[in-house]
Amino acid sequence: MTDSAPAAPRGDKLGLRLALAFLAVALAAIALLAVLAAVFAAADVSSLAGRQRSELAGAISLAAGAAWDKNGNWASADLFPVLDLAERTGVDLQVRDAGGGTVAGTPGFAAAAGPLASAPVVVRDQRVGTVLARFSGAGLGGADGALRTALLQAIAGAAGVAALLALAAGLTVARRIARPVERLIAATRSMAGGDRAARAGDVRAPGELGELAAAFDQMADTLDREDRIRRDMVAGVAHELRTPIAVLQAGHEALLDGVAEPTPDELSSLRDEVLRLARMVDDLQTLAAADAAALHLARRRCDLADIAATAADSLARRFEAADIELDRQLSPVPVLADPRWLHQVVTNLLTNALKFTPAGGRVSVRAGLAGADAVLEVADTGIGIPADDLPRIFDRFWRGQGAAQASGSGIGLAVAAELARAHGGRLTAASTAGRGTTMTLTMPHA
Image (cartoon, rainbow, N blue to C red; front, top):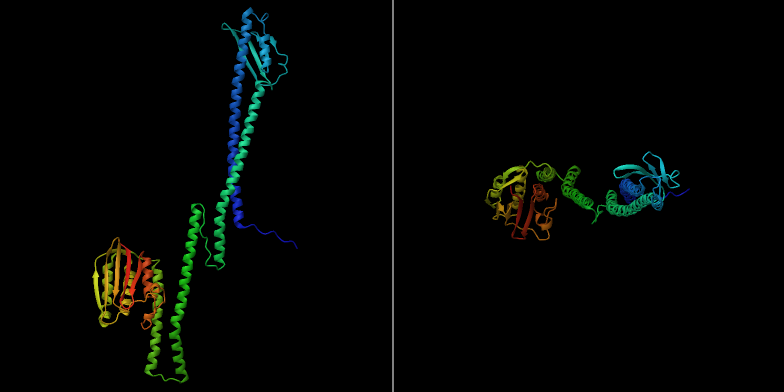
């Protein structure tokens, strides 16, 4: 049985594919540029060589014309210097008279192969003959081919160097892109495997990849926080339900076993536990509604002072019954909010202040502007909150030591804080044990 080769890491495959893609694009561009450069360079060299051949043929025709002009005919013209010039420049030459007959020529003209250039022999505006020059592999013809070959070699060398540079650059860029992607893949797999602490971390990458890594970590933090809140909520619900259920179970078993009589006091105690369970269910429904409201707020322009006044009016009798003064200092301040849920926030804050303020105390509700923000404060002269408990008062189902004797499930402030965040605001608390508490709702001013 043979062992199969281990699969390459996904990041390595991505880096290899990116590098090959970069190299393919670079090679295509280099090949296109090289072909275009070779074509245009060959055309330029051919054009230059053609001009040079024409100019050389013209110069030979001038020399032949000068030889003809000395004697006035081709028969006695001395063409040796002309033929010598042609041989020294690597040109096979033939001189013809006006009728096309051959006057003189180099020995290899008939067998020579190569570009042919012709020039008329003109003496005193009279055409007396023609010079035919054939350029073979030597001289100017050879220089033409050598120049073209040298240019093609230079282009090929430059293309090779460019391809190597493109390969190096492609590998560098591919590794820079593949590494953060590989880290993101590893972090995602770790999270999928149950590791809630997995993060991409500080990723040094091009802008979009860096933003992706930061967004991934932010998403992971949010999921971790929501998961923690969910676990705490389940634990809190279980803790809150355990006591009334245990009391109901014990009371009913006592009645069934005949240990206790169904007296009005016993039945009233069981009814109180049922009511306590009903209040918990109502609180859970309120909490679920608050969570849903954070996603579905019907915002409109409204007055925070009017909403606070309405909430205070609805609780006025309870304040009177508890012998607690309710002081109002409300200045009009417009906000963009859902009036229903903002009323719930103010009601929760006033109810919480009422609950922990002894008879003869005072609760003040103030609304107004503070710079560019709308601010609502609910201050009481109650028992206050210990410094150790203050950071946790907005946690769901959390109740401090001072709330041990008070009714409630510990979600009122959590709901208020959640709704404040949903409105783009924040809820903060300042308190001194034994001297009262101030809750401050800050929202954007409309």
